Image 1 (cartoon, rainbow, N blue to C red):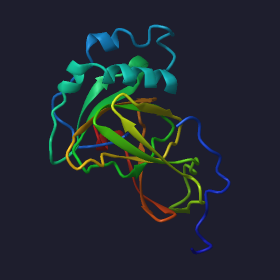
Image 2: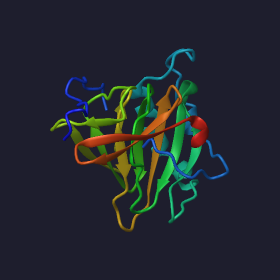
Image 3: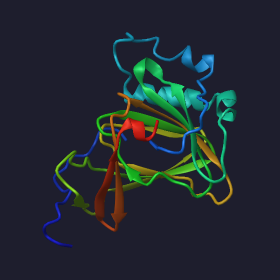
Image 4: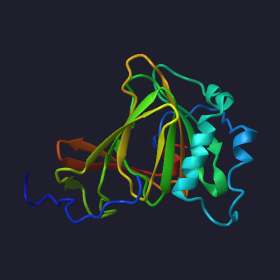
Length: 210
């Protein structure tokens, strides 16, 4: 590996560990009243939700069978609808056809959470916090890769600058998940990966996926 490629050796681990962009469907669908009525009542509306509170929200939204059934599914590509997240957060209901995934990406300074509502998703993530700016190619150290499988009802929360990819590895079963972020995503950086080398490919603004 060329010595000019920086490494992630000195980058500290993130806080507790989707989002995924996809072709949007045209009609937004909000969460059922049972979900929205119970979110954000314990704290002042002026305070943003924590990652743990976002995880609680997405878990309860994933249990709303009417909400999950309202998502149009497309065998050719992922679909989404935007939801009303708690206290100014950004939330999405996302459908994953068999064999689809997000590719490697991060969520800038937003914390977040997601839960699988149906099917099974796999997450590959990095147990390091990447530099936010000033690099194009990064060589990852051994031992930074993490993998988890999230069946229906299982989810996770994550901190700022969390880097991951999410996949539906099934060859026959559609998956559906609920995601939430706070503050609303200011940008998404997308990466390609070859072995230990991570390369920044593009940076997306909200208008690119909304």
